[in-house]
Picture 1: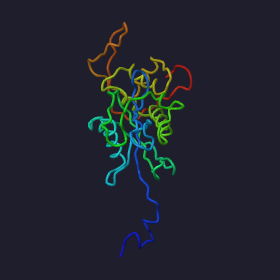
Picture 2: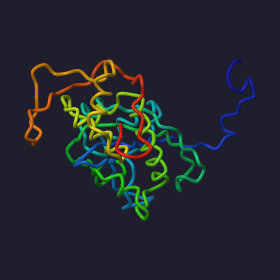
Picture 3: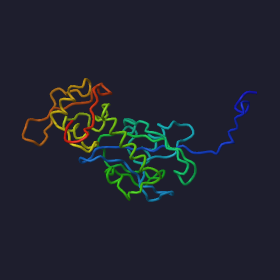
Picture 4: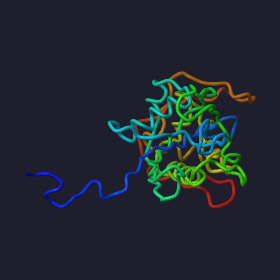
Length: 251
């Protein structure tokens, strides 16, 4: 007879635990970095704000669960959720992170362009969803549920680092954008000021980072000529990287 017991493995010798997903979803709104939060409608932490997420079902992957929970708890359409750039952040497994039982969470982070205010559908644990400035969500006393303050801090650092050596900044932009809008993404995420000519030179000198939209331009409110429009190019990484300035308004 073959099987687990033949090699001495007893599945009942280990305490069962649950697997969940948590999502740190970022966007840039009104010149500030925002994160998507839901207000919990059930215990534990009823009434507290938290990152969207939930339990992984027996027959689904963690990424499938992440996209399902995001749609259920925010009201975002399946098409919008399917198009999000979603990547795994890390696993959180402290034994007491959830008061209900031993719960291991696989956290994801996503970058999206500015979207309408979400609306939780009333299913699951969420009774409300909204975009919250990261500074407000991470402020002392904000008291996010579970260990979500730690997940949020880790995700914000990951996003800042990814912008240095990948082309993911364009995920915060609309399909067609100006270089000024792209620069605003970097300045907002990094919380710094970049030199405009230097930033423009570096972006345009990076093969495949952005592509011009032929004949398209957008008025920017200034007295100069309309700004040219660009769209994401085929590149996924930046060579050389676009490093965060250590100090001062330089790119």
